[in-house]
Amino acid sequence: MHVPGYRDTPTDEWDPAAPVDPAEADDFLRACYAENPRLGPVEPRLAIVRAQIAATGTYVHTPEELGHGAKMAWRNSSRCIGRLYWRSLVVLDRRRARTAEEIFSLLVRHLQVAGGAAPMSRLDATAGPPVERPPGTIRPVISVFAPAVPGRPHASVWNDQLVRYAGYVTEQGRRIGDPRNLAFTRAMEALGWKGKGEAFDILPLAIETPHEGVQLFDLPERAVLEVPVAHPEYGWFAELGIRWHAVPAISNMRLSIGGINYPLAPFNGWYMGTEIGSRNLADADRYDLVPLVARLMRLDTTSESTLWRDRALVEINRAVLWSFERAGVKISDHHTESARFMAHLRNEEKAGRQVPADWSWIVPPLSGGATPVFHRYYHEADLKPNFYLDAPARARAAGCPVAH
Ligand code: ARG
Image (cartoon, rainbow, N blue to C red; front, side, top):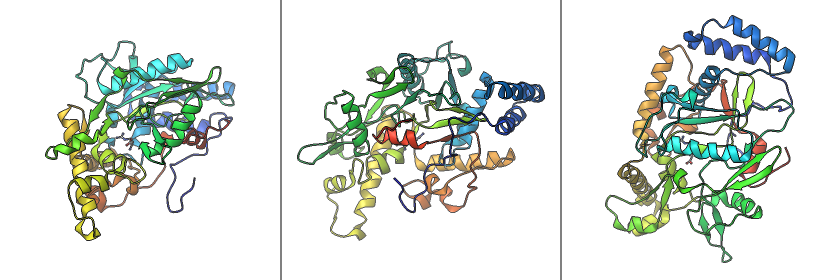
C-alpha cells in the first residue's frame, strides 16, 4: 500500500537473481579493513574475493567481516535513534542452519540471549566470552542465517517481529488484540493455528524453507519476556490487563553487506518507552488506549483544548517506563535516548563519518520539541551495509504471502 506523503522503508531494489556486484564488495571490504586495523591489509583479501566472485558469482564473508558488517548496517540505519551502542551488537553467526526446526531453535536462543534468560554459549564464537546476566538486561543481538545464493530460493520468517500479538475481530465487530496483526493472524489461522482470542496472544513463528515450505512454531514461554503494565499512582491501570513484550526483534528485513544479501537476519535492541506508550498502546489503529485512559482519569474530553489526549498519553508512557523499571527489564525514555543520539552524532563526527538519519523517525512521538534531536536536520544518505524491507517480505508480514 502506498500512502501519499509517507516515505516507504528504504529499498535498494534487490534482484535475487543477480550475481554479487564486485564494486560493492570492494567498497565494503576497504571500509571494514580500514576501520579494523587488526584484520591486516585489505589487498590480499580483495584479490581472493574478486576471484571468488568471478568464478562463482558470489563470495563468503569471514566471521570478522560478517560481525563488523552487521554493526555497520546498524550504524547506517537512518530510522534508529539508539545507534550510540552500535559497537556492542552481539552477532550470532547462524549461516549453517538449514531446516525450519534448526532455525526455530536458534530463534528461541536469540530471544533468550537478547532477553537475558540464557547465558551465551561457547558455541557463539563471534559473541565473545560467555556471560551470566540477570533476566531483563536486554542486549542488542542479531542472528545471521545463510546468505541468499543468486537465483536460488532462500529461507524466511514471515513475521515482522519474532514476538507479536494476534489481532481478532469478533462477530459483533469488536476488535481484540493488536489490529496491526489482523491479516497476519488470519493467515496463521488459515495454516491451522488457533489463538485463545485474547488481547495478548503471542503469534506463532511462520518459518519457510525452500525444501519444507512454511511451518508454524509456537514460542515457548521461556523465550518470551513480558511486562505487565501498571501505573505508579492510578491503581485502576493494572486492571486493564495491559502487557508488552520486552524484546523488539525485527525479523523480516534483509541485511545487505558488501553485495551479499542475508534475507534472514533478525535483530533486536531494547525498547524506548514511547514506542509502546505513544504508538503500540496509543495509536487509534493499535490498542487505542487514549480515550479509555482519559475517561478513567476523569478528564474533560468535551474540548480538544483541555489537552486530554496529551495528558492521557503522558500517563500511559509513565506507566510503561515505571512498569519495565519495576520488573527490572531494560527500557529507556525518549529524553535519555535523544541525549545518547546527540552523543552518537558527536562521536561519528570525530570519526569522520556522516550519520544518515530520518528526522521523521528520529524525533520521538511524545514531546518531540523537548528533546534535542528535534532542533536540527540530518544527512539523508542511504549508506551500505544496511537493512532493507523487500516487497514480498512486507506482503508476508501483512498476511498476503505472494509467490517469490
Ligand atoms: N517500534 C517497534 C515496536 O514497537 C520496534 C522497532 C525497533 N525498536 C527498537 N527499540 N529496537 O515494536
